[in-house]
Length: 412
Image (cartoon, rainbow, N blue to C red; front, side, top):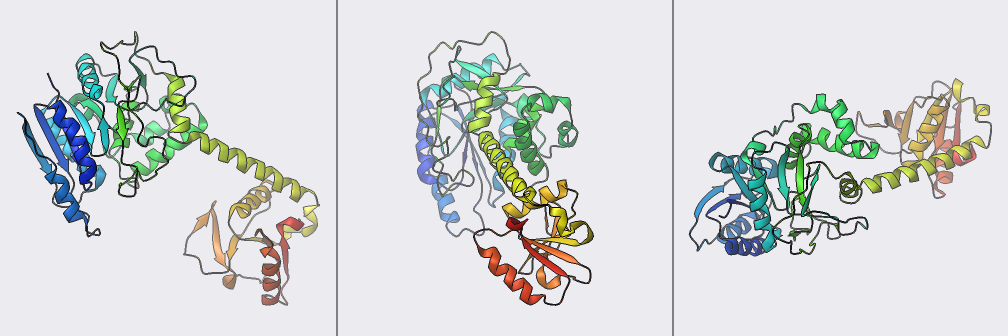
């Protein structure tokens, strides 16, 4: 017995046609088509949305429902409201977006697991993606594993799981401080990444339906299912995409593989931490954050050594207003080191008029034209590449007659 399919489309008729052919071959008895409306600032959207909707030509015995928005609602509202309508009518569904090409085995995989875990609240979603191909330690024992994550490039879920999500994420502020969140995100970089994602989603800065759904799963200590091989190829990583625009993304156009039936089921429901760690490192770029932190730490040590080579107390920083010209990488590093030495920075300086109330690392930015030199002051130049000399000369000419020291950070 086939499962209901929800097909989410927008403005990419060529890609939608490829996925629809896969749906036609599966021939579900129930099909829900969810489409957002054209964006008002994109002239071609009207035509492209019409062409994409025209792709849906059902020529098999099927009950089809169309949930078409006339105005653009955005990903968060359109997909969320569309799936709300789907789960008013069915208990479970397979969900495909217009750039997610499923393998033939994907549908059977979802069918079996939708039935097997129908009443199990520990499972909230079934993914078609597996991103472990480059993990040298990946040796699956069963047909799937349990994960913190569900990947929404082709997936399936139940009404019982969908109705638990809260698009406003009202429980996030308290969960953010909880032991449960710390246990899930035991790695500090992992925790920093997801805290930022959930903070921005909670504040409405990220237009996503998927993060609130993922949060609802985490807050209930539930898991997603990941197949032992990749069953979905995402062909949407190009300039026409709403979100996935990176050609070199590790998730882009991955090949699909056959999966053996009957499925071999894990003996217990528990998260595979090792595979999740790889997903965090590579897919969510936690490894890049770690490498950047190492780089920043090394730079901090280098700058610190340079500043320590002389007796900085000779500059009487504690009796003067101290400013830093430039608020780039070295300006921020210089501020951190001086504050460790309990030297207060009054503000960053720039040669143009910055936007009001802008802070960098908690410190305001001020134009040199607004500088108050009524008290003894020091300007530290944090500019690299030899430009510091010309800036020092410019500032000396501009502020002749004032009790002002102008020093390159390299001379400290």
